[in-house]
Image (cartoon, rainbow, N blue to C red; front, side, top):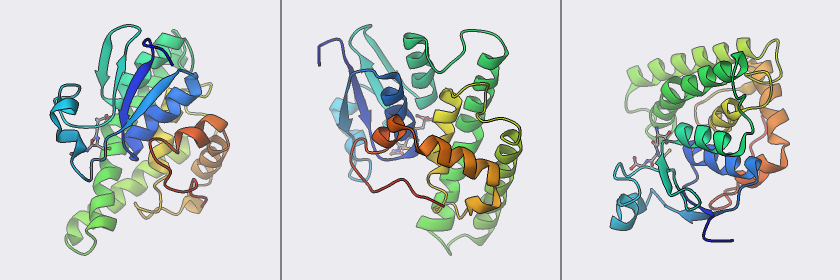
Length: 213
Ligand SMILES: N[C@@H](CCC(=O)N[C@@H](CS)C(=O)NCC(=O)O)C(=O)O
């Protein structure tokens, strides 16, 4: 470890796992700092100095002096820094962005709400349960159709796959049976075998094995 390494502030949520898996895939040296959002670590003055928005994840790249929040922005930054897992130009780059933005603006927020209404607060808001269950199923149909004729979301394994995979890994919490979405299941299990994904899944603390449908 050197002073040029990356400090990485995170917790065991899909937005955190996106970045831990990416750091492992890129092979970049980093120090993971646990920001346990269930006990309010995100509101400490020292963390607010890094992210005034009080959300994980965040990185501080001491090599460039760059402090960055927003998991998808971090993925693009790391891909550009290393020249890996994102095409430099052309259709593959924009296809990866398409799915990265789909995850950031659509898949992630919808599934996040589904976790609240279907699992953490089940029975409290039947309308919201139905709304988010149906929208989650629609998003899985979209993903399944996209993967029907390709191994990954863009031409090669990319930050788009890295962004979406941790959300799918929470399929039990959003009441999705991956056997109903055979292309998503195949893609999910394929990526789960990667050593970097196995390692990244255990950052910042080990919560168990990657779920198998
Ligand atoms: N759009 C942000 C979302 C970040 C986010 O919502 N982080 C959650 C955990 S997944 C968080 O820090 N929640 C703490 C809180 O809301 O107090 C990203 O992609 O990084």
